[in-house]
Image (cartoon, one colour):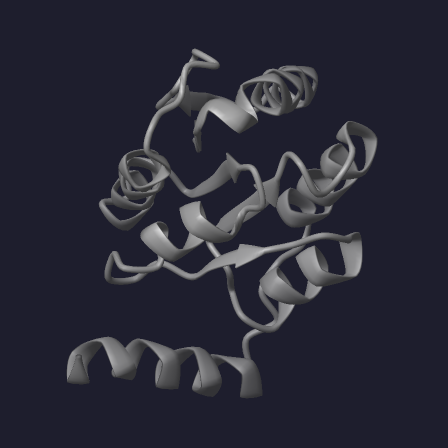
Length: 146
């Protein structure tokens, strides 16, 4: 299950992501917003992060104008590793080396076609583990010291 969440800037891109997920037979939970009226992105970033952290969803894709604000909100939730990605290499490395569990996209930064390719890369790439697990564990340990 993939959680989807966005602010007003990400409504159109989220609809494209939903079509991608439908075409791949992947289940998703749409946590909103579904309006282009101005909303506060931290609400939606947190909702997606909590869905992933609780195990209700395996991963999430979150969208705001730049991907920055919504990812900052999501990363405040324990166990979340949200990565803003602007190309496929970043998405691949976020999964392969950092075990990112949330992809953040900037609807005003990447075009729709590229955003879909980034999302596909994020969904298709597995975590390598090995030496990278030690680093992910170090990231998690920071949460314990916060």
